[in-house]
Image (tube, rainbow, N blue to C red; front, side, top):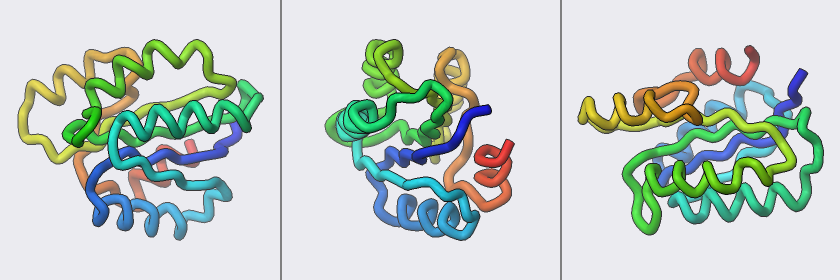
Amino acid sequence: MLKLDTILLIDDDFATNYLHKKIISKLDTNCSVEVATNGKDGIDKLLALNETINNKDTLVLIFLDLNMPVMDGWGFLETFEEIKPTLNFDTKLFIVSSSINSDDESRARSNHQVLDYLPKHLNAATLSKIIFN
């Protein structure tokens, strides 16, 4: 059984991160919530977590936006593919996007690393289902 350690929100929108952190805090997850405002920052946070977590039974949930500056979600997915084998923990990755481009959803769903494509904004029921199941 995997033990949830960290939820990583990768999104450049302050209001979205604030809302998602607020909902997560009310769910009593007993885990830390990290925020990255672009894909590069998200990769850096995963690598930093890799320095402190050394247990394959530990889970890090990743909620990734697609459209961000510096490194977008697609760039993150490419780099994540490269670093994932070196991570000392398990991950589950979800795309959270407000994109209305159906090509974005198709492309995301066809990526083997992406468990689901979710519309912004996440609600307590969706987060609860992901976190506690």
